[in-house]
Image (cartoon, rainbow, N blue to C red; front, side, top):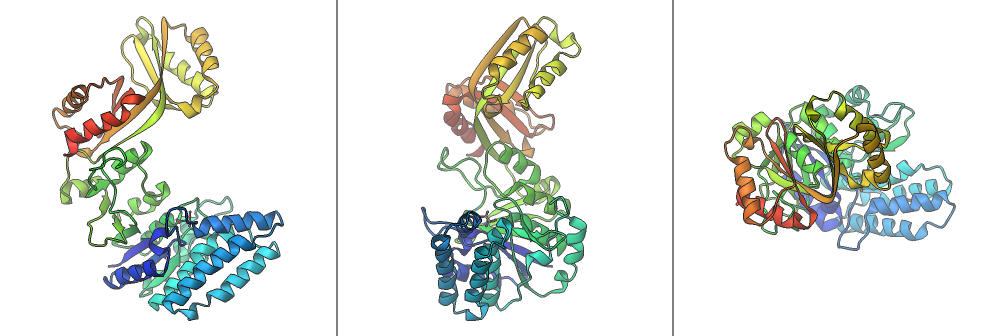
Length: 440
Ligand code: ASP
């Protein structure tokens, strides 16, 4: 049995946080594979190491002086090294090499950005007295820059036999050996890949919150932490605006049925949130009807009416073709006998609405076209809702008691997601009303 534990930037922002991480790692012998981000912000207004590195790369690329951001990076790493008394990490020499590579223009932007994780892993490995394995030797991309699972699997074969290892997150190597990074926040992906490669029993993702909240705490201050959520519920919630893990970090572990456990480095005693598959969720974790509530503002609804529209072949197809021509994706498309509605994202239709309206009028010849903007969508998500009587009734009773009328309703066929559209000005009250109805 082994656990892969990934620690985010706030968990490694200074020597004090390194100590907390080391205590956590040492408190469970199953925590064998430790993946680290680069040091993040220590306080609001502070700078993340990765941001400073990107700044150095940009300045060096423009042949400008990068000494100010680079000295901030140097100071941060050297102070952690000094504080933890891990001079054997030899961070000064590694920093000199990075600086020289920037100066001579040899370093690619990705290489420079990856050095935050690289140096952080060196420090952590020295502090824990555990070997560091460079991610460039484990995580491999193909020629097109996509993750090469087969090559990665080959490179990770020996890892499984190591008693322990510290691995830098966020990057891997191209076939020619050059460094390539994932998108921002990508250490989550490294953690997931490592967990999969070593066949971990659990992927721990350590951060600075107790887990995922059942609703945005800026809207519902008393929102509780979710004990468990399924991968599918999480996707629905994050699509609707809940900020969670890096999206791509779910797939590697999900396929291998490895549970993710989100935990708080600053409060390891808190239970955290489990992310598991639906079967495990319903079987092992006590779970309420609803996993969580998330929503987004900024939608427009176009409703077309026409007599016997439902019998007219190709009506919806023509509408979708018009939208496709303008590169507009459809969020949802509820329909009735004589009407059809599409919900569109405001950012997609900006500056295009007049032309879309014109094409709808001339190509579809509807009886009426109604456009409602400033719509917010709210998703109430949970497997427990499926086949439970009265869920929708409860939701609409709560909304009407709060004096909110819903403009649109959409329930996914799997009944795990009930979406309502409300006027944007009712958004926050609607989220609170639904939260009260299902989560309190
Ligand atoms: N350090 C990288 C970033 O800031 C990757 C990560 O933290 O996951 O995006």
